[in-house]
Length: 384
Ligand code: SF4
Image 1 (cartoon, rainbow, N blue to C red):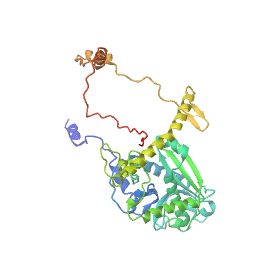
Image 2 (image 1 turned 90 degrees about the vertical axis):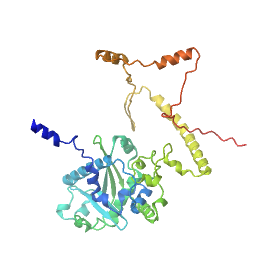
Image 3 (image 1 turned 90 degrees about the horizontal axis):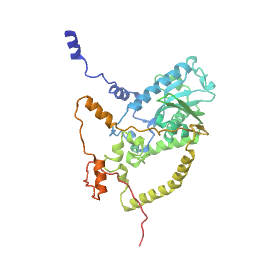
Image 4 (image 1 turned 120 degrees about the vertical axis):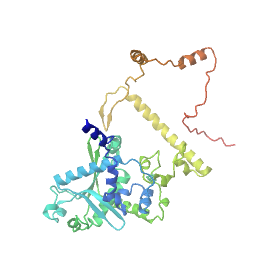
């Protein structure tokens, strides 16, 4: 008994969570500590500006998904290195931007200039820069339909352009690679991995020097700004863009949240702005109306169609199941069996029906804890 008592005294109250350890370890990763603008920081111009000007992040936010992505990423790339001899996680940089390329598959001519032990088991037909992206099932349909986003393309073009113009950075662990000098890149490959079920999707595009120039120009604009606030917000703000919802600078960018007001409301300064926003609202509604009707008609036509793949799309049905309702009789029986008193609440629905029947208005009171949704109503302004 004494032994048990001692064990209980020193045992932690709950199993120790590993999550507090993860952000601390993540913050020590070289990518988290770099001060030069990282190619992966080029998702939003304003955010890149905050990083470049050394501003302290104003918001913490949920990092667990991103950390899981990083761990998965590391495992996949390690396997590619061990099994295929791919060159992974290598640094490329110049005086203004730095990045870590996920994987490079050299063509046989370039690979033959490396010492034998560094040559890939399977050289590529053309030198290819690969970027691995982990995505959730929720984002998967967009990945299959549209592929890499503008920001993802910009990031990889920056890596590829650094490799093509500077070569691998001459830092510890990759000096032999740096000796290759500039490595002309012919292809870019995105490998998307669904982190919920492991499905993967590959998108390959030919390297275009013009797109690389545009990506470099984007970085130059960010670097030329004297304050982050001069730079445009690439996304539309918290509540509309998930990227802003999780941005470490969202308070710096949009100010503190004010209850009952969306952050975007600060973009309106006067009646002229108000008139412009109303006109945009009406115009967007007009554009959507025929599209919504078209979609409604298509939906109606599909009623009763069997699920399956048709052309470019897969049809699935969900819902149509009986909903769950409280089984009051079963609850009463359970209470009675347990010897508990069954609470008797007034039957509001029956009382309302009876009052209506005899023509007496149903009494109401204002509930200030439950507010109705604020809806916008815009009508044409009849000018005098
Ligand atoms: S909140 Fe959105 S717009 Fe502002 S810096 Fe962050 S990502 Fe960019």
